[in-house]
Length: 395
Image 1 (cartoon, rainbow, N blue to C red):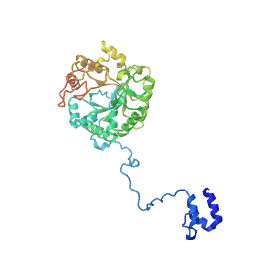
Image 2: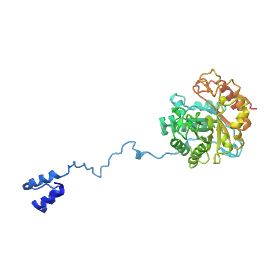
Image 3: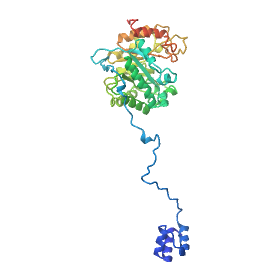
């Protein structure tokens, strides 16, 4: 017998008043306990009544609840002294506010996360770079380090770099340091693993954080695009161009003064597609990584074909150059050289009016510019330091 039929039975047997008492859960009269047991035998199982918390006693908030996470905050410019002059792209030149051409020469540091873990993330590191004559520092941010340290803690490192570089009169290039195919989201090594969504969010976060800070002059959107002999799938220039333009759109919504830098194929070496179909955005620059074994003699002719021609129309920055002897620790393709590459590449870039940053101001990341943490220069370090200090004139 279902509950409704039972209720009709009770109405007939004990009357309307008692039946209503049973239906609403009131305690039946003692002389009608048998009727109550009939009702209870067909009722749905009862659950204990919840504990009622008085309105004047609010529930305690959990520490770190997702709804308590604050919105991102921009970099506090009050931490800086006199700001550096804002650079901009004007045709094929980098210029200052007076329209005068600016040539940048500097170094790559290793990832700030690595430096901090090793006890080498401090102002002195930047001071030595400035003593070498540099006026720009490229900061490679590896996706694995960005995720592992977390956005807030990583920003603490980058904020320090902005303060130190401003105090020392050096510009910064922030580089999303991945190697691989961002279209297929396949990469050369786990340290470079990322995604389009993470990459877009990285640049949204960076551009919001450092909007209006002239020291942070460049954003190198992706370090070295490559399909790795199709091991990472395929990537057309049209696809790569569209991905870069999406990144630029995101950056531009926060900061339309910073200069985006775009790399070409073959591990950031080949910019030939720019000749027929450049990025559809004003105020950008292009980068190449012309290591010594990327081509053969005649080097200057091949460099012109691969990337040098860009300097006639757009700012060109060689954001990774460097070399080492074949028997030096960590020597590998494409950086092995007998030493002739150093003068050749700096002379070539000077003739093109191109800027550059040498790799790498860390004794553990080849090709190294320093041998130890006393900042003893390598052979390559001696050459690039001499050029930056003006002691070796370029031809």
